[in-house]
Length: 240
Length: 240
Image 1 (cartoon, chains in turn cyan, purple):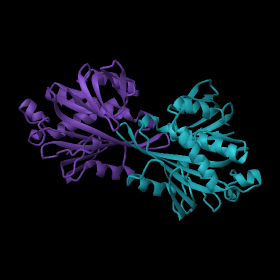
Image 2 (image 1 turned 90 degrees about the vertical axis):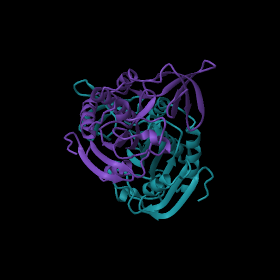
Image 3 (image 1 turned 180 degrees about the vertical axis):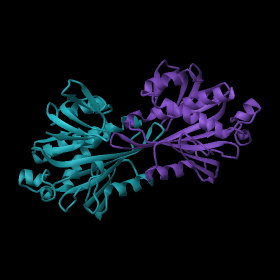
Image 4 (image 1 turned 135 degrees about the horizontal axis):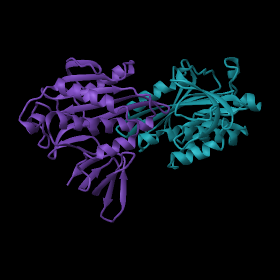
């Protein structure tokens, strides 16, 4: 791959781009390093799930080392999912939306997923690694009924290299945007969950209600049947 | 050592309790695990400094795994330095104060230092490790003219075990305190830098002015000679 936007490590296959990226980050790789694999043997999703990584998809981890307080780290993950949805909409003419916290959906089916890992010393970010799996020309519905790909949604194949270049360029521009609230504000314009009945599973509990809003800190606000508004900082959201 | 408050790992000597604690955290040790060493051969301070760790001092790293958003992680470090200063004041009758971001001073001399390392997945904290070096019965002024110990300040020796037990008990209670702003508010009552001329060295610049305040996010506000107020999220603060 020839990508001008980033320091690129392109691997034919690896266990997980997250692990490769973590080692690179700890060894001092530059800001905006990208590890791309054509396939992964142990791809990871959020909440310790497996991410099927068959040929034709785009599997990557982006190493960001911004000069930024750890409290702002979440901005990067919201910015990445927003930018990815916008890129896919623009380049592939797909009606992609974002699902809290970090999925990209097309017609209720999962097109892409993101997860992030941060390390900070004191209040300063050392690195934020953002893992992204995008179903491009592969057929993920064979493994997961709820998944789709750009090819399945459009009937056409797309250049993974072209998509990556577009995404990285847009993300670089987006990184100039300095506040989490403004990123969340834009993110909400593409959000598919708001106003809908959801079940949110957190490490502590399962919350059922209407997804009312995402606040300035990135938390999901769920209106429960007793009228209470619950603020959920992390969890898995299911549409009902 | 017999400590009831925590899962304790007591080592005669180690390179750095931070490294031992990091491995324990990654291997799934419980919340409130403490690694204590009588001496360290490669003790680390903030900004990659060496922390001299001769016998008689208390060198430890606390592994915290709170169910808490990463944005709140900084609360733990401020809470730890506040609690340590309060513990030393109470147990040793020393006029200890806190210096932004994480030092404990007595009469302008450094009695203790703290540093923290956080790992988060998505918006959730995996662990925050807080390293603490306290000069108790040792004589750090031999290595660093700006350092002191409890023994040097009081003329008496103190039980490191007793101090640790008092500190951990108070910290456990303090962890019930849920907001960063309220911790900062208490922390400021013991702050020694506010209202004074300081030089703050950050990775990007050196800022000179009057330390006017610490805001609700834990940033130092420095009034510069041109009247501008600079918000500094991380750096090293020197009294002039």
